[in-house]
Image (tube, rainbow, N blue to C red; front, side, top):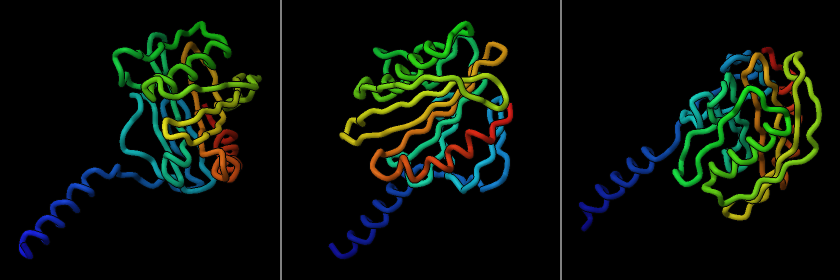
Length: 193
């Protein structure tokens, strides 16, 4: 039994390490080129190695359960924001004639469907906003995760030349949303498109 235990611990440790999502460092004050635009973070972030969609990049500071910033760009007509994860809940496609309130619904449905329909996403406060010197829009989101955690967030975006560009920030409402918001505002303000 004593010989089996070290081998079991080693095997479990290897499996645990393999299950971890690797991240890479996003350095502060260095421009980051994305799909069709760039941003300059004021603080360090961690970039997830997986992609929620072919044109989506996810950053986090404290782990995605607590905070995340999804950066999406160059979404053309007929393309979805995220990959389909449930054939019964297909991702809605973007169309180049969408108005800001249509994009608000697109984001709302995409977030809900990416969570297998288990979350009800609320949106409010849709208003005009600057996106890298272009006319864009901004709105707030909130939802409870399947585990009951309240998350709040902000979405900033624009449609330029028939393509959609978005940044979706969400964080645990208790502490993390407000504590990370000043940095997110810096990222939002740094957009170059």
